[in-house]
Image (cartoon, rainbow, N blue to C red; front, side, top):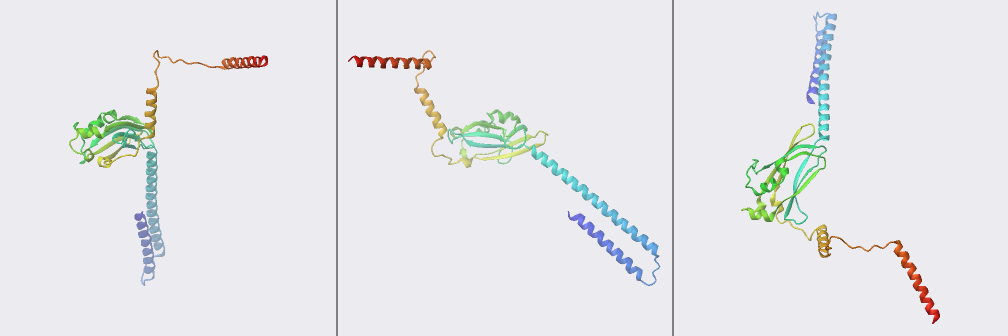
Length: 267
């Protein structure tokens, strides 16, 4: 933005100096410059200045148009850009059981979603001896990825238990560090990549107060189901009671009442 201003300032300054020089030169004694020649010089210089200013204006118009086009392209890409997020969350059964959640928070469909595992140095982990990576690769999404993931689509699955990891690892399980790199494309095949760092030290001392109410309700319903007797032949005997039965019961009640009144009158 400063370059056009500098150019215009120099052009205006040159014009002012030129006209001042012409005026000063015209009043110097012995000057033989003809009036028509002076007018020709001023006209030529003015035409040159107008041409330069037009050229500068054309360049700035082209730059502005290019900036607007770039901005429109960025807005269009943002409107279809997917955003994949990966996180570990405690399972509702217990905080020692971890689920992995993969979700598309973006505004567009994600295609060819792939996952890679990196160590602290940023190198790809290819070894299958790593218990965390081995647990992740048991899920098909981490080995084959997603061919397509819609807007708002979420994948959630049980990943591992800290009890099992602690039994298989020689070191402290909470000292583990892992980076999951997710690469994907939008519908126009623009490539994106995001890294998610998982530091297991953040799960140290994780705990809850009480149990999940929904889990408690499920356990209570399960207990009630186990206490209920099951039919031996697979059928449940049900006694139905309809309006005919109610009318018959009402008639029988009136008959019994009439007989009772008759016995009372005889006594």
